[in-house]
Structures are given as structure tokens and as C-alpha cells.
Length: 212
Image 1 (cartoon, rainbow, N blue to C red):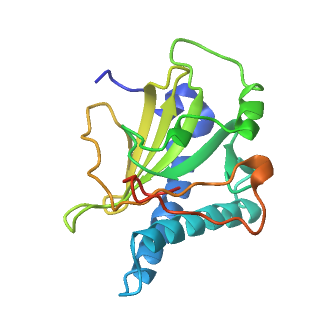
Image 2 (cartoon, rainbow, N blue to C red):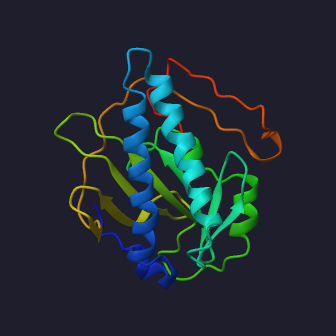
């Protein structure tokens, strides 16, 4: 795999100190949500929807606290779009190297509107920024958060990783194996004008990805 740039090399606004604040929050919420869904009454669906929903709401609360002036909400629908400086960012629970959900690589209408405001620069122009939360598969694994930049042909050109146990933040320069298969579930987020307070999600047993 070609050596990847760190997000901060693409933009000073994407400093590791900023990314770590969001990534740490995501993992803290994920840990708690998985603990709350570890009963005999839970299944892959509840273990997928609760972490996604809680992470989304936790990020919104972090923005509303106004503790970080560089952090904003650019679109508050179910397809939450936050801003780190001028950069629009979404989050998913998926495989950062080989996303199973096409929405990871397909911007929504609200995101496209934000992207049109950003100029292109250099050969490594990043078109999409994504926080990808990867759940641990075994007890020997750990949950991880990746901050990934994709170019216009959806190649990974920038990457940063946060691991909860090591508390390390670094650019990933070498190949990392794709995550193992997760419990079968596919959750469909509601986009832009379709989002309402009564929206719900449906599982698709034929798909193996954890929903966002």
C-alpha cells in the first residue's frame, strides 16, 4: 500500500489533538453502549443501532457545548455532518479499508453542498473525510477509530488512527489487514429531506455490516 499522508499534512485544521477529542468520545460511548446491550435480550440489531445513535448524539452534544470553536454542525439530520474547521466530516461503523456500506463513499446532498465550497489543492486532494469506528472482534482485539480521507476516485490518501488502550494518535503508513466480519446487520440512515423524528431503521439479514 502506498504510504499515506496524515490528515494534518493535508490541512492544519485536522490536527491530531482535535481528532483525538472526537475519537476518544466515540470509543467511550461505544464501550458503554456495548455494555448496555450485552444482555440476553440483545442481538446484532440492538448492538448496532444503540452505539450508532449514542455516538451521533454525543458528538452533537460536544458541538453544542461550545468548548471547541473549531467544531461545528453543518447538517443535523440523521446523516449527521460535522465540521472540523472548514472540512465536512461524517462517521460510520464499518471497515475503514473496505467499507461495506456504499454510503461511506457517497456524499449526501448536504455534504455535496459543503464540498462545493472547498477548493482543490495538489495531487492528494481529499474529497471525503470519514471517522470510521471499528469494533473489536475478539477479546484480544480492541476497538479503534480511523480518520480517513478519500480522493475523488475513492482511494484512501490520508489516514490517522486512535486506539483507546495505547492512547496513541498517529498516521498509518503501512498496510493494515481489513477488519473481520461483524455480526450480520445493515442499518439504513435517513437522508436529508427524508429525515423526521419518526424515522426508524430496518435490519437486512443478508448484509454483514454494522450499521451507521
